[in-house]
Length: 115
Image (tube, rainbow, N blue to C red; front, side):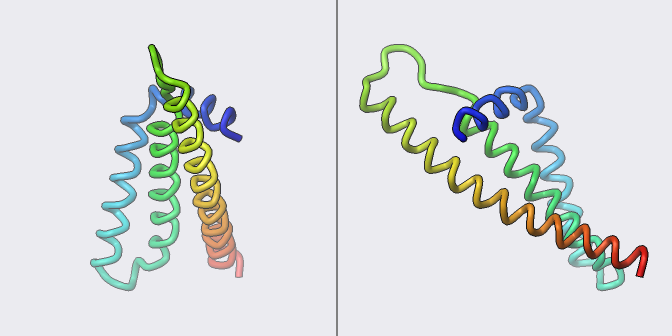
């Protein structure tokens, strides 16, 4: 699991500024829709899901793209690996919650369009 996160984070590393802009844009749009009124309430959950996904991807890039280099002690390497494993488990839980929200959003969109 940690190897998958590291490879994915290295591939997303050049796109981190775009991920930050997307997360901020979706977050600001969520706040704007939240405070403008209830007539646009259908857009709240998709904006929240988009902001969470971009935030999680940005967090993944920041946590897993770089490894300690140089003369690093065995204890520091072990501690870094332990922290990365814990963060991988937490990020996996967050992504599972995101997937649940995504399915709820998708079902709401389908229900609104077809029923």
